[in-house]
Length: 428
Ligand code: 5AD
Ligand code: SF4
Image (cartoon, rainbow, N blue to C red; front, side, top):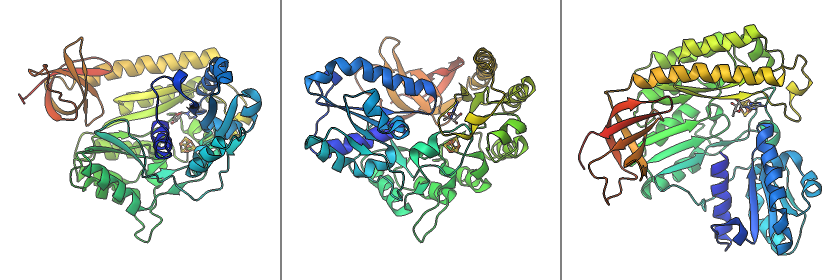
C-alpha cells in the first residue's frame, strides 16, 4: 500500500513539473514515505532523517509523509528541525497545494486532518512496473484491532466508486497492463458509494471481466468480512488468482477476543474450509502476531496447532509491538521481549518445514508464470505463479529476447522453502 502511495505522490510531483533524480543527494526536495505499523519501521525513519541531516544546509527541502507523519504530527518539526512538510495519507488529495506552499517558502507545511470523505483518485499515478499495477479501492479502516495503529493514521474507511475503479482498471488494461492488485486495509468491507452499491465480491467479478485482464489479486482481507460470495466469485473466473491472504493473527480464541478481531478460531476455520473445499486449489497465506499481552504458552501452542491444521503456503510473523493510541497499550501481562523472540523463531521454523513440504508437492506439475525479470548470473528467468510463488526457470531463449511481461507455462523441477525452480514447458 505504501509503495502505491509513493507512486501516486510521484505522479502528482511529475504533473506539477518536478522531475525524479536517481540519487537523493541530487534532489532539491526529499520526501520520506513512512510506516508506523511496528516500532522498528518508525525508528528507521528517524535514523534516516538524522543521517541525512548533514545535507540539510545545502538547500534541500525535506518532507515526511505517511503514517509516522500522521502519528507524530508537528512533533516531527521539533525532533527533526530540517523537515518542512509533514503529511499523512488522508491529506494527499491536498498534496499539490502543499507543494505550492513549500515553493512559496513556507517551512512548516502540514496535512494532518483525518476528517475526510475523500479518496485519493489521481489520474497521474507514476507506476513502477509496466505489467502489474495496484488500484486502491478502499482507504482507511473502521475496525479497532487492539494492537493496530492504522485507524489512527489512515483514518476512517472510505470506498471509491465502482465507476472510478472500473475506469482505472480499463485504462490500465488498454495500456497493456495484464495484472492488477486491488488494495485496501480491509478490501472485504468495500461498499460502492454510488447507486450501484456493489459489494467486494461483485467488484472483484467485474474487474476480472475486463478485456485484456489476465490476473487479478487483492489484499488485504479481514476474516470477519470475508464472505462466501468472494470464494464463489473466485471459483467462477480463473483470472482471479489462486491465492488468498487471510490474516489470522492468533490461533487462540481468547487472544483473538483480547485483540478485538471479531471472530473466533472456529469462525476463521470455517472460512478456511470454504477455500479448501472450493473448485480450485488456493494458496493460503496469513499474518501472525506472537507475544500479544496475556498470550500464555497454551495460547501460543494454539497458534502452532492452527499452522499444522491450515498448512499455509507462506506467512508473515511479527512480535507484538506496542503502538501509541491503541487499546492494547493499557493491557497487563506483557510478554517479555526474549520470550516473544523465542516464539517468533518457533513459528518461523515450523512454517519453514510446512513450506518445504507444500512446495515439494508442486514438483513435476506445470504452473503458468508471469515473467518478471532475469537472473543474469544464474541464466534463469524470474516468474511469478498465480498462487503468488516465485518460480525461477530456464528457457531455451536465454539470449537477447526479453520474456519479461509474458505468460508462460513452466514445469517445476525443484523446490525450496521460499521458491520453486523449473524449466519452460514451451519454446517461444
Ligand atoms: N505489532 C505487531 N504486529 C502488528 N501488525 C499490525 N500491528 C502490529 C503490532 N502493533 C501486523 C499484523 C497485520 C500486519 C500488517 O502487521 O499481523 O496483519
Ligand atoms: Fe489494523 Fe485491524 Fe484495521 Fe487491519 S483490520 S488495519 S489490523 S485495525
